[in-house]
Length: 154
Image 1: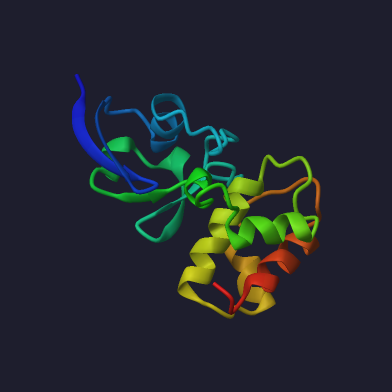
Image 2: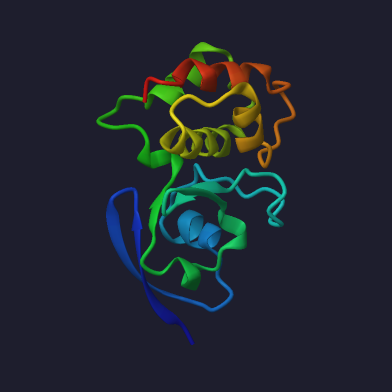
């Protein structure tokens, strides 16, 4: 038996019936076909499934869909507008912070949540904000540089 929920994802409202055990990650990827949100560890350790929910970066694999009822959710697909990349996306490309790309959506959303709250974070604050996102390719330096490049501009 399911429960009716309303999710506002990337500015669009969705009315869905979800199962009690269904995660927000499942709904985003399988029901809404927004596959930029990656399925990684499914234990909240890797950050690949990071989305912004009610202005905070969260691991969507740890949020039950019923808990997200009424929430405002942003996925990586919601950042680009009218075919133009968001400045954070552009900075990641420009600074070489995109390698295999698997961690990139979660990294960018963690960075966006930080910059929405703190326009000019220190390097330590940036590193803390992305500490829940694992990257095996870049060594984080280029990611931090890309985020710093957007500080004060968003």
